[in-house]
Amino acid sequence: MSASELSTVRPSSGGATDALRRSNLATVLGLVHRDGALSRSDLTRLTGLNRSTVGDLVAELAALDLVEVDETPGGGRAGRPSPVVRVSGSVAAVAVNPEVDAVIVGLVGLGGRVLKRVRIETASARSAAETVTLASAGIAGMLAGESGIRIAGIGVAVPGQVRLSDGMVREATHFGWVDEPLAGMLSAATGHRVWAANAAVLGLRAESAFGAGRGIDDLVYMIGGASGIGGGAVGGGRLLTGAAGYAGEFGHTFVRSDGRSCSCGSRGCLEAEVTQAELLASVGLASAEAASLADRLVATEDPVALAVIERDYASLSIAARNAVNVFNPSLLVLGGFLAALYRGARAHGAPDLLDDVVHSAREGVTVVEAELGTDQLLIGAAELVLADLIADPARALAAA
Image (cartoon, rainbow, N blue to C red; front, side):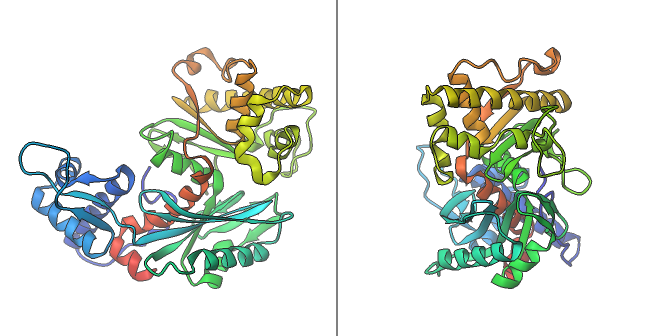
């Protein structure tokens, strides 16, 4: 996926030589961000640039305090060792994920490292203005005493449809939000630049860069949380966003003809039939204990809980079948409570999730759980900010 797909990247002035230098800086920083510590010789090989150019680029990134260079790496290699380049810990992004039962705020460094995480419990869904107030307070508290870290900006993972061009929340039905300028509101409240995008798409982005989808060109991702179900798809190595960025609404896949009313105005949608709240209640967990859901579903022998698991798994199977038939991925990644449901159902003898997929499309498809756990949405939200930083490091730091 390109760095610009979910970020706001403005062109910089300068001639062709300057543009090439900035592009090469972005390439080097992006490699160290996604792949971890790399030797300078590795960077030379991966970029196709000569050693002198790579050395100059690394020196410039080090001067910006974006990377650190270890001139005496170990490893026991024969000959003169190549210096190792790794991301610096001096720059980070703030990530915000509003849910109906909480506002989660995190601090995420280069390399997708979650440095801090704060959960602010709320009784129910709230207005966009109230969310901004809670998030701003959480950010201020989290950053108190963090004098050594520069904040490159704020990324927001919204459980709703978000216009990528300006962070306008067009519709977040579980909150009752319509056309809320959330990014602009949070920027005004905090003084930082703010990006916003659909939470599930950002979870997909995180898993593709650092988790289960790493290196996979064709995948489908589905995630369930307190605010519903969403997801996204990657085809040919590119994120499929749709015309305005609203693609991937798997929560509104039709799964039951006599189903419940959905917040979208329809009936029988996956997220109306399968909810985190019901699964948690079936095994006696509160919303703040969602991280324990998979283990509880696996361990339960309660007939009522088993009936909920069976019913919900059948609905998930319909949605998964449709997604695989349409997108023909090689990997289906399940996150959030959908991963817990999948693990629990399979532990109790449920059939393969893709049993009803067209045979030819089913061949070679692997179903896996997301690897980043509760951090995936925070990492994805931070990527909105860090992609802009990587695309033009000097400009982004000057604007932060």
